[in-house]
Amino acid sequence: AQSVTQLGSHVSVSEGALVLLRCNYSSSVPPYLFWYVQYPNQGLQLLLKYTTGATLVKGINGFEAEFKKSETSFHLTKPSAHMSDAAEYFCAVSGGGNFNKFYFGSGTKLNVKP
Amino acid sequence: DGGITQSPKYLFRKEGQNVTLSCEQNLNHDAMYWYRQDPGQGLRLIYYSQIVNDFQKGDIAEGYSVSREKKESFPLTVTSAQKNPTAFYLCASSIRGGRAGNEQFFGPGTRLTVL
Image 1 (cartoon, one colour):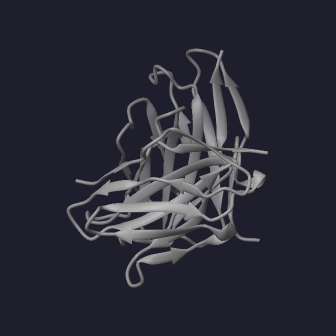
Image 2: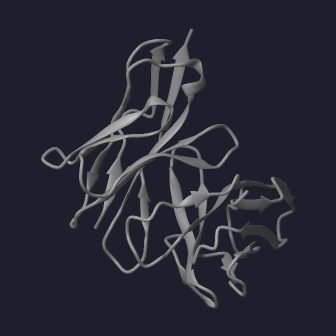
């Protein structure tokens, strides 16, 4: 079985500060991991994904995430927050089974203060 | 431009009515999905289809129905049997449904409100 836990439903940072959004997963098979961003009343946009290979993954808009198997984590970071980063972020895991089922976390809303 | 379109963006329904949400993709993807999003609950899978003329129930299929007559189209009907249909509905697609790791591409969503 697979699942995702996102710690912190709301995170608030100041503009220019480090962004850290936490994601822990549970998977009985090697996981494929994703981070998506959602702006209000819009669909989800892929930020980055981990499939195999390098454990530090770089995505769009300056975000990156590191796959840590020993910690079953895939935390999302950005060195310096911009006002435009304010959105909701979802972590997802897929893998195993007979179709590409995604298991989503409950989301983290990021607020960026000026 | 390739992508996924959903219509309408906003939909209002009276209790007891069935409504159909449209989802079209021109990405030539085999697999398509419908999700329901409620505040604080993430995304929950309603139905998915890996290939034309085939679809499977997801985690919360009760009160919903789908069809997949064409590769590019996957409409969702919210029936009167769905007891709490007010939500944001998202359609997604991926290049192949049977292979884990393929990213899912999402449409802009339809917000359904029951009056």
